[in-house]
Each structure stands twice: as structure tokens, then as C-alpha cells.
Image (cartoon, rainbow over all chains, first blue to last red; front, top):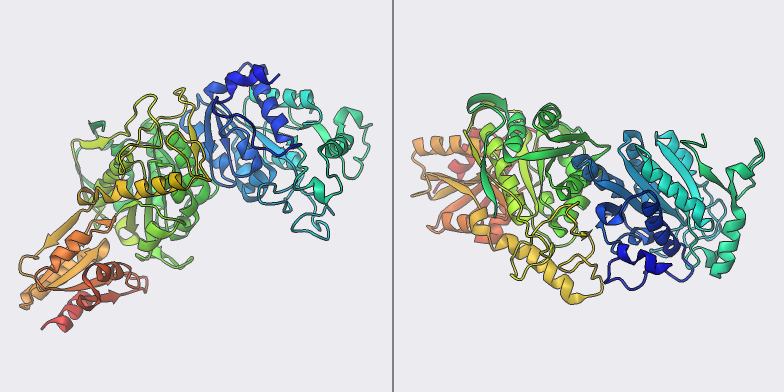
Length: 254
Length: 382
């Protein structure tokens, strides 16, 4: 499978920089496949990222224009590039801490502005690169390096946040359901306006090991169990605590 | 280095403009095609004029959510091929510092106009100050160079904005116009020229965008969408843009070249203006709006028989060390009036030693009056 993507990867890059079991390597491949499925060529696109593990998905791996920016600012850089040259097809790939914490203001304003930018938010619910500190997406009660007694705060529901800010297409998928996630990303790329796809991606090194899920397989199984597609939820049924609702919120599913 | 003549957007001849309006027109004349900013007193007139004028001239205007986003968008636009500008004042400059470092390190041409007000902090938003001289050069972490000019008239708000764009393009770096509220809001005659000389960033297809064989070289600058597979990063990078965060030699070479490419051209970059310096034994070293008062004070001092002169700094960064040293070569002493607590006086002391420099400071939100400078000169008189 990897060979099929060779043409979209820089020849100098021999391996992903991600830890064994990290979901971001899977996501890297899915993004390129989604771009292809959307009828686009990644080599003619601009990929903008911030700081953190997810920011290294496109930079330097993709054989494309890649702009690796400051922590949290990917969307502001992307906004300038897209407004300056509307012919550019622009995708932002970054993490939950980057996009929703330090970059939270840029996220909601980019959604409000509605420029045609597709955002892939790799959500591992943790600050991976800095050593496993709590993120604004960390689940209530979860132990992290900065919440040793468990996270006392509620996590953002990023899809609802971005939808409320005015995004034209919003979806949540998981690397444990790769084809579904790929489809959401391709949908985002083909729709006009601002699209946001939250990609749940497990972090065994910095999150799992503190949460009793210290093998990649255990973490994948756990995430898979907690993911429920909207169509799998009966009527107005409440989402079980700790679960993720997968689906698209603007567009066909709405 | 590609250069050409560009026709200003306004008809040539005399116009009655505020400094801020003149800066906006200077940007258009220089070929600015993109503005992103956030409203802040006393700079907002630049933004408002460009909101109307840029789209009329094929440019793009964006009001961003804050100043961090503003300079971020400017950098994104610069790599999309535009000459790009933002304008702000002190509090906004503070927020832009991380992007200023990014622009310097990624060699992104862009222009920042700081219409200074009385700081620190929110300070006196509508009052004049000149306290951002050091922040403009040292505000972002690490070692890097910027280019900064200090206009003393509405005319120079036009001229030096063009100059800032030209140097930002020639050297691929952030260039700063360190204006002051009093110049930004000053309304006076501005002569719009028939044409201005403008520079464009150099581009050689396939050339490495972040490296140069010369230790002070400026690399080729491609833009997005040319099929160059650009790799731009604020991490330490090699000539092609690959991250080299573990390579001591890569970091050393990059940081030194970013400094050399500016300092090696200090002679051409450093613009100063002398008045009555030939026989001066008392030299006023001034810049920006204060230099207007200083020129008046020097003339009044001459009427009283003092051998006074004025050295006006048009360039503040890189600091015109040579001109300052020359002004004192004849054994003169220096008076440095400033609307801050002696930021340029400190630089002058580094050049000529502490004994020859007297610092005259005023930080009450008002500009310095000629009489204040004259009195100081009279006190210094032999």
C-alpha cells in the first residue's frame, strides 16, 4: 500500500517521525488517499501546519508546498496564503492542542470567515511532543503529566465548537475506522467553504501509558470501542460517557 | 535583483495628506498587494485607507482577529507571492513579536509599520511616544536582524514605506517603519513623484530557497504553486528547508548568515542627514518627530552663537554607528533628545563612549518642544 503513495512523498523522507503505535502515521496515509479520492493532486496543494506531532504529518513528508508555522498560527498563515492566491488549494493539518488551545481564536475566526480551507485536526487528546500534558480535549478525569490526579476540566467538543462558529462542513472520524475518516476528508476537500475534520488518533507513548493502555493494540481497541457513528445511536439516545460520536454535522447528514 | 519603475496610485504632484495616509499611498506605490491588520490607535488610518484603496488596485485586504494573526497572514501572503504589509502600535507590536522572529528566520519579505504611542503596556493610546526602538530589534527571542526607518514627515511616511518594501524584498526580511503618533497624524504637504523605483524578490527556478554560498547572501525566493515543493519551517533548516534541529553547523551557519546579510550592507542601509555639522561642537542626535524640534533648536542655538548641529537618523536598524562616530570625530559632544528613557542614547554611548553623550528624555505623552532641546544645548555650552 505504501508504494502507491510514494509519488506524493518526498524521496528524502525514509520513515515517519512518529512513535510506534501512533495514529498519525495512519492519518498521514489517509490524508493523501483522501486528496486523491477528491480528484486532487497533493503535489499541487499547500499544506500548512503548526507545532506539535501532528504538524509533522505534512512537513516535510508531503511532496507539496509545506508551510510549518508557529504554534497555533497555522490557520492565520493559511488564511493569508489563501486570500492572497485563491487558486491555491489549501489544507491545514495540525493537532488538537495547536488548533484548539493556543490557536483556538484563529480556529473560530477562520470558521466564521469561511475561506475555502480544509482543516484536519489530529486529536490525540494530549500534548504529545512536549511529554504528555493535558490538552483542552483531554477527557474529564484522565491522568496526564499535568493532571496527575485526573483532569478536572471538561474537554472541548471541537466539532460542535467549529460548527457553531460557522464552518461549512464539519465531521469527526477515527483512524480506527480509516475508510470512513478518509471519506470525511475527501468530502471536506470537495465542498466549498471552510471544512473541519476531527481525526481521532491514539497516542500510546504520552497518553496511553498513563491511562493503563500501554500497548498500541490496547489503545486502538479502546478507542474503537468508544467510537459510535451517529447512525448507530438510536433516536435521541444519550451518548455513553467517554464515547465519541462520529459523523458529519454540516452537509448531507444534517 | 529585479527592479523597475512604478507609478504611484495617486496622481503626481502636491497632496495634503496625514502621515498615515501617506504611508498607505507609499505602500501602494511600492507594489503592496496584501494588507492584514487589527485596528489600533494611532495607526488605524493606514488600515482604513488600504481597506478602500487596495481592492481598487487589485490587492487584498483582510481584517484579522488579532495582531498575531495579522502578521501570520502577511507571512502566508508573502509566500503566496504578494508584497505584504501590516500596521500597528506598541501593544500590537508586542503580539507580533513571535511572527517577527518567524519572518526573520524564514527570510520572508514583509513590512510592518509601527505608529508608536506612549507605552509601556496600554499606556496613553492617543499620545506620542518612541519607546519601541529596542522592541523592534530585540523583541523576538534569539539573534536576528531587522531593518527599521524613522520618518520625520508625512513625506517620509510615503518615501520610507517605499524604501522599507524595497529593502524587505532585496534582503528577504521584515522591514519596519518606526513611525510615531505625531508623524502619523501630522497633516502636511506630500509630493507624490511621477514614479518610484521598486525592487522585487529574486527568483531562480530550482535554486535552494534557504541557503546561499556567500556568508551574507540572499537566497532565491519562490512562491507557493510553482511546483517547487517548498518546505518552509521556523525550525532550523538547511538550504532546501529540511529541518536540521540536531545539527550544530546548520544552526550556526543560518543564524550568522541572517545577521551578515544585513550588517554587510550597513553602509547602504544606514541613511542619515546632517544639518550644520561642519563646525559643530554640540551635535543633537535625533530621529523621527523629535528631529523637527531639534532642527529648530539648533537654528535658535546658532542665533545665540553656539556651534550646534543636527545629525538626523533616518535608519535606526541597523544602527548607523559610522555616522554617529564621524559626527563626534571633531571632538564634539552629543545631545540625544528622545520620547523614551534613552534608548538611542544608549546605542550612541556604545559607539562613542559614555562621557560624550547626554540623554534628554521626555515620556509624558507629549512631543519634545524646541525650547527644551535649546535649554539643554545652552546648559552644555562651554
